[in-house]
Image (spheres, rainbow, N blue to C red):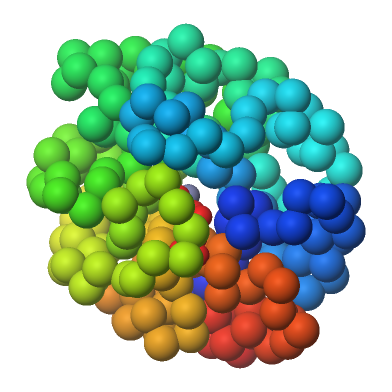
Length: 219
Ligand code: DX5
Ligand code: ZN
């Protein structure tokens, strides 16, 4: 049985108590923390960036899973590695096709892992050719930009296609899903073959966060 990783999305945190929120998630069993960077240009929202990552990346022992929903990932991707990212996932739709491998290389050269994300309207076969260079693929199960949205069922078929292709080619690339994940949608994604579940509104501000993380992990 595949080990399921839970990556709480900081976008749903109480920013007045960020340190405490990080500590709570780590104590509740989260091994990763998902950091949603939004620039108000690639997505219609602005969240947080490099100074915030710098101040928190070493303040916990979780894996810093950075999701950059921004234009110009070639310029900014490596800067998030300098700020403490362990993994930087950029968007397929934010670059021209002939830039994708440049961004992958620029992030890897800085010593971090690299992921590629696709929005709900992007077909999964657009990224199959990059799988052997990627540490992770992120399937967006909502339109990027906001927490608290509803899960889009068409993500399940993308996860199944990725699982089949990664296993067929004996790759170690992880599959992550992000958006509208709760116990019920999380289970469907695990059955479809996902490795990492991102969850924001399902986990933050909840008294029973430890049980919720256990449920997502299938424990
Ligand atoms: C949306 C972000 C997601 C979001 C998840 O653009 O990439 O990580 O914060 O929040 P929930 O789990 O509430 O959908
Ligand atoms: Zn995200």
